[in-house]
Length: 318
Image (tube, rainbow, N blue to C red):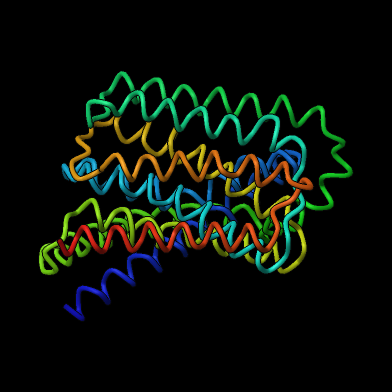
């Protein structure tokens, strides 16, 4: 079993390194094309940190492991809010941009309910995947449109710090992109194959693995980005990264995965879905309070995750 754990950890490490390489290469190419840093931050960086979830869910779907595919996305969304935002708020209370309250978080809640509607029959069909995939295209276009209304000079001061510096030449850009994609593909295979073997040895459902180890592991890029942003006292980057990632997880990760092949979500319970939707909704009143997420509220979020984790452990043992 120790060998399997090693391969799982190695798979997670490769996913993290792959996402980092892809973001660096793609960001550098974007700079060379003259794309504004704010736009890069809203798309390349935000979406790039979610590529581990995308590759892992696609791999799981293709190998008929729907519980892992959907559990990965649901678990990542729960982990992103309850743990990452919770930890970031503990490090530095997070001031909230009004746009998050009025637009981005309501969109995140809306797409969560859309997923619930599609998943009532415990599966995601290709048509539903197509609708979700169209949704991420619409959301990206909408983000571009909204970015035009923001003072670019004011926001670039914050956004620039979250974007890797351009690489030396286009050759390095291509190398980082191809290398990042390769690591993501290999890491996802390594992670899925050995996680399934580990789940069978431990006698627990594959969905539980997806909701816990895999979802937490594939959220490492978001964790690193948000914690560093909180330490640097840049809460807009920390929480904006999470909200964008959660929208991406539902619309793009589950959308593309189910568009490639219909997904059966065996092992995903009503409790799992309720926790994901619940913590998403809980963000709104937390944000309205003094327009920030305090350390106390961060502790509440972490406590919720610990209770949910205890529930998963209890049900898997029972």
